[in-house]
Image 1 (cartoon, rainbow, N blue to C red):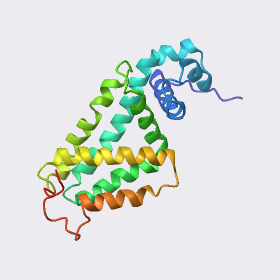
Image 2 (image 1 turned 90 degrees about the vertical axis):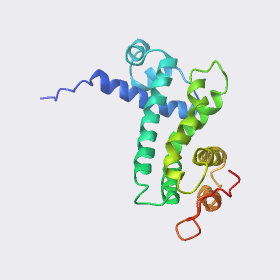
Image 3 (image 1 turned 60 degrees about the vertical axis):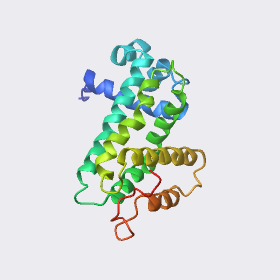
Amino acid sequence: MAQRRMRMTAEDRKEQLIELASQMIAKQGFTGFSISALAAAAGLTRAGVSHHVGSKEELLVEVIRLKERQSSQVTRDAVQRAGQMNPREILDILFRRNIERPEITHLFTTLAVESIRPDHPAHEYFADRITRGARQLRPLLESVSDHPERMAIEILSFMDGLQLNWLRDRSIDVWAHWSAFADRYVPKSGDGASTPAAEHNL
């Protein structure tokens, strides 16, 4: 007797579509992405996809929210370990996570570039993204800088720039470049990390 296939719940289907859309947008950008292509990839009708995720713009918001929740939780967990690990170790963990998930880094980098246009549906989100990230990292950097948010913005800006060049050219030794940069800002324990980093032109 053939087994009956279990139908996905509406919530599970929506999550599946959001994850599939994120993979497609990472490869072809938001401007090249379409609900019709998503429907074909998911084996659904266009109307079926729209029923679960709404318009193309609404879907993009859902994709961003999903990845933001995942990224923010990792950052919060890392910052909460500040008493157990030094700031440099935590920054290394956060950066390594990005380069170990190139498809997600590609997605955010692609959207960040496209959303420079004021009419892009993700424009406001990315306009404030680095400020939000700096606020999250502030508690981590208070022990090494008199200006932790400013320092966080410089670190995050370097991360974004390095990751963009790495996505273009995978021969770049991204970890070596990150380590050299981080050594100047947040040295590893025992390498001079005990004094505040007020001297780093911050």
